[in-house]
Amino acid sequence: MVDPVALTQDLIRCPSVTPRDDGALDVLERVLAGLGFTCHRLKFSDTGTPDIDNLYARIGTAAPNLCFAGHTDVVPTGPVESWSADPFAGEIRDGMVWGRGAADMKGAIACFAAAAARHLAKGPLRGSISLLITGDEEGPAVNGTVKMLRWLEDHGERLDACITGEPTNPDRLGEMMKIGRRGSLNGTLTVHGVQGHVAYPHLADNAAHRMIALLGALTGEPLDQGSTHFQPSSLQVTSVETGAGAANVIPGIARAGFNVRFNDLHSSASLTALLRRRLEAAAGGARWEVEIKVSGESFYTPPGPLSALLADAVEAELGIRPELSTTGGTSDSRFIKDYCPVVDFGLVGQTMHKVDERVAVADIAALTGIYERVIAGYLG
Image (cartoon, rainbow, N blue to C red; front, side):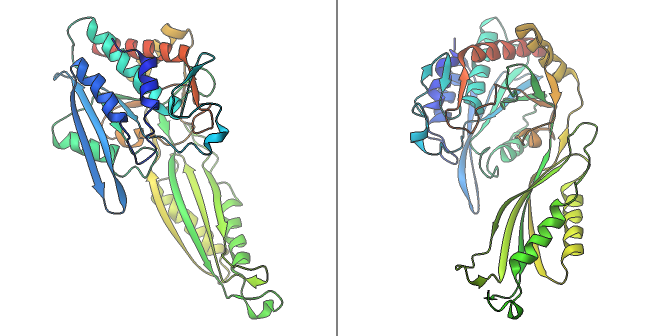
């Protein structure tokens, strides 16, 4: 059998900050291979991005194929001295497992592996169980899940349903699953003026003043009021800089970064057109350009057999029924939804990406039980 708490600790002890793996996939592969899974290590490359190691593991050859998707890469710790424990020690204290990745999302990976082991121990497998694990979720997401899904398609591998183990619960295990996600768009706005001396403004054209007007046009009015399944879209300015270099210099150029989390009222194309119209209307003769990069479109998976099965499993294990939500950030489900029904459900995310990230030992046990019920219910 697989101990999900010990496996969580072992995975945390691999400091797999994107794009490094540092042995995390080796740890998981050893466990899965020991259970009889066929494991494929998939390394992908792309110009301008780091090479990424990934893992696809499957046991069984028949349909249906129930997949668990996750990532072993984690975000940086920040100042280690701010932590109350070594962020890569996997310490157990006060009923919690502490460490970077405990919630997001090495704990959930360990829970699913343990749940699969329990199901396999009960008798012959009907259908298939698979894990789709990337090392590129917290990074640019270029050499991870997207390319793994193409590899699966090229090799005749079909996914029939998928659970992505992101930490979906805000405060208490079992309170929320995600059946959709907002899209994400990043923009870099550059405004050109004429540099000059602050004492002679008539000889200059202040790019920062121009930038203020253009950012006001982007943020002054809501993008929408929300939709049936989603909260309102949100545009947040993330950086503003001029690089003037001195307090007595009027900047001749200004740059600002912004992010838009958008709902299903927009596509990235229609949203980009809307943002450009707002900028053009407010430009007032200023020279500007905007660069747009899209990391994912919004999507919504209507409630169906998979979300109902998961909700039933949560209720049976914990006595509560999870809310079906589309709030929060993006996940790799934005890619998987093109291949099969997918829902996100994992541990409590209250400390994800924070100093002293941690999850309750009791929650690891409960999530393992939930996943075990889902596997049994889906595969029969």
